[in-house]
Image (cartoon, rainbow, N blue to C red; front, side, top):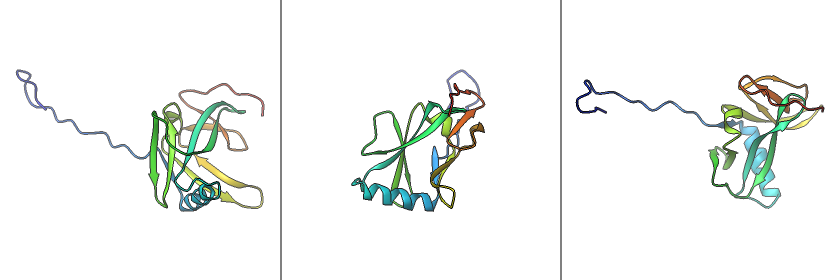
Length: 137
């Protein structure tokens, strides 16, 4: 782009932006199965962050029959889409959703690169820029 009378043209490159969240194949299969079992074969998995938990913020998941106007929709492999609301995006951008099934627990787990600390259960966390308000477990 160049502005008349302002000298040499300026090159503007769009910033490289990755998906808000990713999901392992195991988690995608489980999410698709869950959506179908609950009667929402075309539904999406909503991932969000709310205040609370013993570290300051906690993750939440729900079935979303459709996206809201301010949601970011992330279509993923395996026919599953994840929706994230605008307020949660900065807290979980770049996170990976996995599904864990072992002797101790089974369920979705979020690996969040924005979390600088988390509680032992792994569902509550703090970010470096906004620690939130911890509450008793």
